[in-house]
Image 1: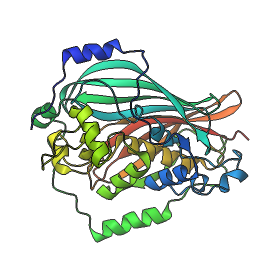
Image 2 (image 1 turned 180 degrees about the vertical axis):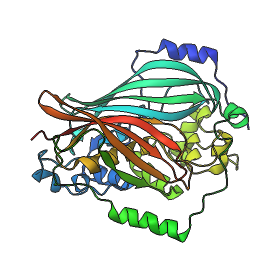
Image 3 (image 1 turned 60 degrees about the vertical axis):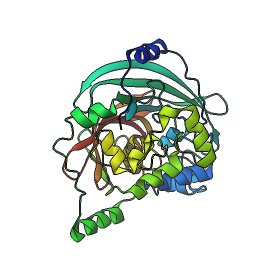
Image 4 (image 1 turned 90 degrees about the vertical axis):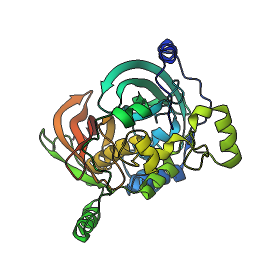
Length: 371
């Protein structure tokens, strides 16, 4: 099987769209953030914070509202989640997001979004040689027209054949599945038993200082079940079934390269099919980029407690996280400042796998009570 190449005319067409709003043809997964959406998204990322799980809990906090996990906004817009335009048949490899929230995301919000192509940047990569970073800016509005967040999100457009045949990024990575000992599994279970959101125990701006470590968070070992769980709450524009799917693939034939049965199936199957993942140059089926960014937000919201608020999160996906990998989410405080009387804390964040390889690198800002 061979796949589409990066075409100069198609690159030119994309550059001509810079600054123009995208024309949506598929609805987002959520248009309204209700109680069920908040709970299902929290389940999907393993986040048991009562702020999202219990409708009455948030009423007693400073927010006086049931809240959603901040990154639930991925489910309200296809573009911020990686459904980029142009270059038909060329793989879109999600690579990161820079989120900016203007307050907590509340249950009961009806969403409207607007996405604009911001930039096309050419790169030479070890993964697939010549690639293009396709960056969009998305704005998120509530039912009253108030902007509640904005984000820059990007994918790398990579040639599948080049990545598989010439890429060097994963030359030293084994395709043999990771097998953990019973002792390892017991250690993961003990870590999960020890984890908990900070909750009502207030973390104040005065109480933190540069150099403080953020409580680490475990994600994994990753399984195909984990991918299914995330898909259930995040959604994907390409996941349809039977008559609806076949008619959609007829309209977009480059979207669904045939599987081993010669049946059209969308490329999102890289997240559960080892064979197809290896066709695009990756050691095996791997997690979703937005999923991993959301894990970093989970670490931060656990750490700041009920009265804190996540304001900014920039996360770059540095490598794939194949099935079997463990991800440890980590961070440290780098700076703090007062901004219009609000206590802002800046953090360095990163994630690493069981071998110490960095899989996420980024930065964040949180608001903590200044009292």
